[in-house]
Structures are given as structure tokens and as C-alpha cells.
Image 1: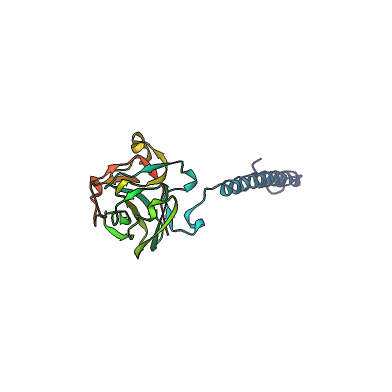
Image 2: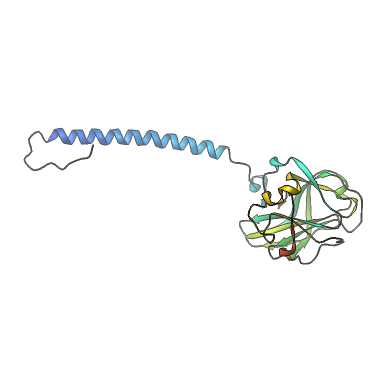
Length: 223
């Protein structure tokens, strides 16, 4: 009910006053029950959030690796780039990824992982991974020098050369899915893209607008 002020001198004034109090108590009880239900829903939602990179002690990743379901083989001499967004300023020490299919007869000195900024500038690179990439599993590859990075967008870049380059853990992975996994992003800002051909070393800079969308949603992280 809506409370209507009682005129001075009204007989039996206690009746409308008590009715207003009863109505108020009813609404408070109903709202309390609603809030309890809402709190329960929020608790359920929070309890089912996917794992985040900091939960694993890492800086950031491009998605929860539990969603990985296949592998994307790298093309010899082609730079494969995957986007990782960093929320706070920090220092990048390692590239983290998973090799699903081991490389074979890899060319010494030409199997590398690097970190690029959103402008395509190489910030950090690893030592040669020719030996490391002949086995499968989770890889934590240190950069030769750690690098301070402000919050922003970065890209892990993978280059593999040999008779059979290694393959990376991915979720979706067909050429037809390149546009889908990159949403409505441009080639410059794509989450997954490739650059160059016949490369034997990580390029010091990449023309981001000259890349090609990639169909393999490979997983990667920074620590």
C-alpha cells in the first residue's frame, strides 16, 4: 500500500499507521528473500568462473588451457603470433606454451620464441629451442633477458625450422575458422596471425598490417 498522510484530528488514526507498518515489514521481508537468492546466484557464478592465469602464478594467457583440444603444426620459416593482453605493468621472464607434436631434424639456431609489442617490435627472445622442441609437453622457456612491460597488448612469436616443425596446443584449428577465432579484429590486432616466409631468425620488427589471419587458436602464457 502507499502511505497517505493522516490529517490532524483523524479518529482511529492508529489503523492506517499500523497498516502502513505492516506493509513496510512485508516488503522488507520480500526484498530480503530476493537478496539472499541473488547472493546465492552470485556465489554459484563466482564458484564456476574459469581459472585465470594468476591462479597458476603467471602474468597472463590468451585462454584457459583446459579448452585446448588439438594441435597446430607450424610452417617452416613462418612466424606464428598469438596475442596476449596484459592488465598491469610487470616484467616478462618466460614464454609458456605446450608442444603437442615434437619436431624432428630441427635446424640448430632457427627454432625460437619471442615477445612482440602491439606495434610489432621484438622486445625479448629465447635461446635456440631446437633440442627442447623435440619433446612434447608444457614448456616454460625463459627469454634471454627479462623485459619490463606496461599494461597492453603483446604477441608471442614462434619460429620453427626443420624437416618437421613442432606443433602447439590449440582449441579451434582450421583455415576456415581464421575469421571466427579472430572475431571482428583487424589483421593488425588479430589474436592469431602469421607473418613472413623463409625466416631463419626472429625479425626485429613485424609489419602488423601485413600479417595473415591464422586459423589455429594456439595457447600461450607469460610469466
